[in-house]
Image 1 (spheres, rainbow, N blue to C red):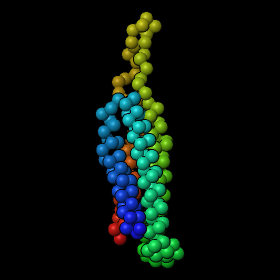
Image 2: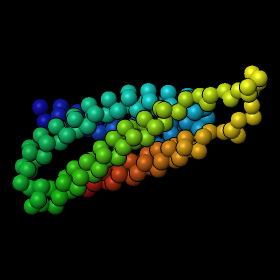
Image 3: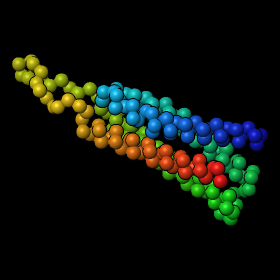
Image 4: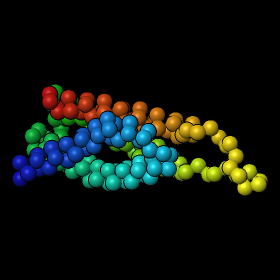
Length: 167
């Protein structure tokens, strides 16, 4: 039983960590190759899919982590031992990562998904006007910049958590 639960803990953690790294290192920088509407559609789909599976992985990490902590040392040791303090630090990092992930998904993801194709500006006679200059809207660029920054925050937090796992 212990081996199966530890295996599930590690697999769920690997999924979560891998997703964080792929998001920050590959997906977010690649969004600039898409138009505003495609960026929004892709980000919405990715965050819904990854977010749902990540919540399952986090639940597995949390539940298996509680079992493993209790089995290895008991919950009272969280405050009384060096190893317990490391586990406590990991728990705090997980909570911060969950808050940051919720911000990325709920706030920034929704903002990015709200960008659609620009409306065609028409002159009263029916011809297209010069309209706004080509390129993404400034608000889109701002949201994408925040997503990149918060993605890197997730990477740094995940690296700190992985470091604590190695202690």
